[in-house]
Length: 306
Image 1 (tube, one colour):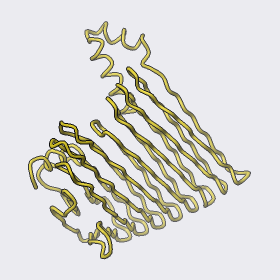
Image 2 (cartoon, one colour; image 1 turned 45 degrees about the vertical axis):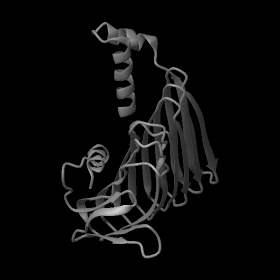
Image 3 (cartoon, rainbow, N blue to C red; image 1 turned 90 degrees about the vertical axis):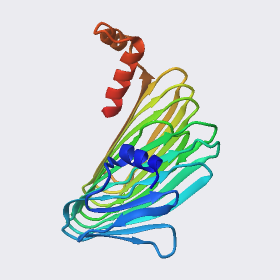
Image 4 (tube, rainbow, N blue to C red; image 1 turned 30 degrees about the vertical axis):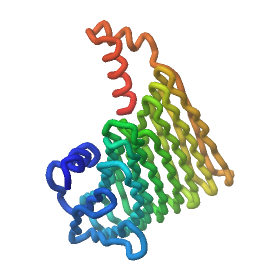
């Protein structure tokens, strides 16, 4: 691995020279390191670029790392990763991505992830995205996530876009069985002329299933964001979608939450709030000795931490 890869790994996946347990490191479209564990098997897909990750039933307390890095321009990386989580397993999956270009050429990573959660399994999925480097080349990250949850399974998705990504299109679809729960926490920061599009579509198909989506974003400079969520309740279920956005300078946000109730016992809620930082918040922090810019940064940091 080159130095840029190691720096990106430290940001997106807390790399400190090694990973404990199962991991696969992707660098510029190729494998830069792989290790399976006794309970987590990582294999290359036979028919497409990407991985098959199998987690044995009953696996507890393990973490699997699958970060991907693009370290220079003129790379359009595409990867398909399938996760099969066995019945009763309780694991963490870390799948950060960093793209870097200094050479004037575009750099892009497109990760297509498919999760199949077995009965009663629990997964914490953590994903950080960042773009670094200077020059005219665009830095793009376009993740696609498809989730299928069996009875009483639980998935929590914690996704963060830190900075520097010129364009991102983020698509997530999920189908939930009886008693399954899905929790999504998204945090986005755009600046300059960056654009970000988020699209969630969740089908609640089993009684007592539920989804809770909260997206917090900050649009600065001349950046533009779009947020769309659709929750379809086809049974006795609960669904909640919330979009909170802060505007700074000339930032723009278009939020469009959508609900479909296909059953009389579907309980669905959506919320959307967009606005600028309140002046009294700035003033209060300035009385503590912060400059206006420092105060704004503190407010944004706290807001995105949620």
